[in-house]
Image 1 (cartoon, helix red, strand yellow):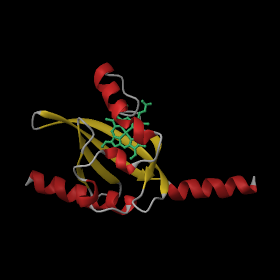
Image 2 (image 1 turned 45 degrees about the vertical axis):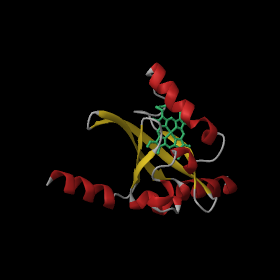
Image 3 (image 1 turned 60 degrees about the horizontal axis):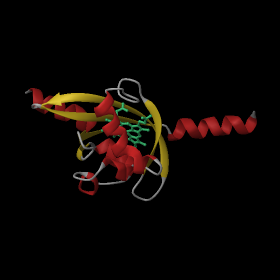
Amino acid sequence: ENAALLKAIIENAIDGIITIDERGIVESINPSACRLFKCTPEDVVGKNISVLMPPPDRERHDEYIHRYQRTGVPHIIGIGREVKGLKKDGTVFPFRLAVSEVQYSGRKIYTGFIHDLTREKEAEEKLKEYA
Ligand code: HEM
């Protein structure tokens, strides 16, 4: 069945996948995203997505979403951005964020795809040291 296939794909995805509602409240998080943020689904489902980011984005993310809904001008949707995430243990890490807007059972949700960049950034820093 289609829903079961989709669930299996999301559960086994290498990248993190998080969905939020139109107000930024987390509705789902896959195992990869849980591993990256060192959290459980219970830690974040029902909370604002901003709990997973450091300042200054943490204080501004609601406004980012509002502005997009007001203006229709995306800054990440369909573009992507390198941003910083906050793990439950307080560690900040870089990742590539892709966001898409999805119409799902008559309402709007946003899906975030999270690709960890920790290793790439470490390699980049090492290279700079030798440059
Ligand atoms: C917009 C940061 C996670 C959904 C933005 C912007 C930034 C940002 C910087 C736009 C700033 C600007 O206007 O220039 C972050 C950070 C995250 C994060 C640091 C770390 C956890 C997510 C996730 C989702 C999401 C996981 C979706 C599930 C959105 C939406 C917008 C937005 C819908 C407005 C649309 C747009 O600007 O394209 N975020 N975000 N964000 N973000 Fe996030």
